[in-house]
Image (tube, rainbow, N blue to C red):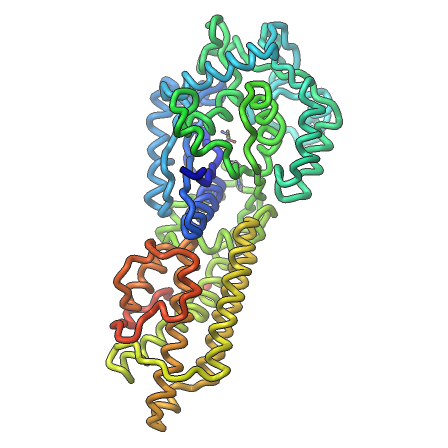
Length: 512
Ligand code: MSP
């Protein structure tokens, strides 16, 4: 069996309910997964929750719960996100599951066997919010942040197991050099490489001051550092260590999607752990940017945290999905606002795509009794609509393979604009008046083929709308049975299919 395409999201902490940051990565991963399936790949798509660590223990305590009670309660909010946003993950992993404990113990054992773990004492600073050990230089930076915005830093001194991260400085730098695609976007690779060149100190990978974690094999006074535990989810999810067949089919991951704030853990620590354990490295770690909200940093204290459930209630899942991936280049920061969503809905979805579909299907109902007409000979304008489609599909595919969602969408919407222009210029309403049935049929047939191609391509981004359009086109096979090469079959929407104009696909919104 050929290797699957394996895509992951970070696993989310259960001390907080989902917000736009979580929805963003999960939607991006879903669009990649759906697109890769469209290309004909077997896909494995994993998401889940990160349930151990000091932060969860403290939050649970503050709420009068045990950590597992807190996790059991919050995890459902993350699991329900899949239904809400039409996410097609193959599995959902929780780090408190037995399979994961076995997996973490096994990778720990392998790293230990490689001679990369030793017992010593850790003395230094710990950032509780980010579950990260802090160097003196980082501490100096943190101290420049105003006190009320500063992360909670604790001085810790305790016995700890260490991972020989320093040993992997050169191997990591070599890996970045040999595989520049390992960290994307490219400018992030430089950041990571500079960090590693600055020198790597051995990493404390166990704690003794709290108990909510996976015990160190052979010494249960220690729990394993939450990032060592969390990163391992990516191999647990595909069968490590016991299901060799599944593991072989899916590992190494093709892409780990992460936010820019957790890139270091994924591009430095994780590959070092894997090298030590003798496990292949993931092919790419892609770091995306952060959303601000109406120009401000999103934070609980400001009270501007975007709840995905509310956005979906107001605009629907498809609009939310489209907006997040169209608004900013994947990798860069951007701003979330209702007026920006509304501008995209009204301009691109309602006027661009919605209008094209509804006027075309409306004309077929009116002039051809709802049956897709037969095409006569194509003139150069008609052939141009076809040839442009083929070129656009190639660009779309190339941009999607680069995880440049917005560029893929721009190419697609430029094409939609071209087709709308072709409609205006061919003026089917005039042809109808002139009773030029053959030419009228050819033009409408051509537009319908263009809509067919567009519908297949929007499916990864807006699955509900694509399904709806596909049904209105009167196609018998479900849209998810289509593959990318079907877009090169000019004639995929067959003459005689019964179309239905239906209600407006993307109602316009008033911007107050
Ligand atoms: N549990 C760790 C990840 C472990 S992966 C082995 C974690 N969890 S988290 O719940 O705090 O964050 C998850 C993701 O949300 C991160 O990728 C982070 O970048 C992302 N975001 C948090 N706020 C965000 C925005 N305002 N905008 C975009 N993404 C943001 O970290």
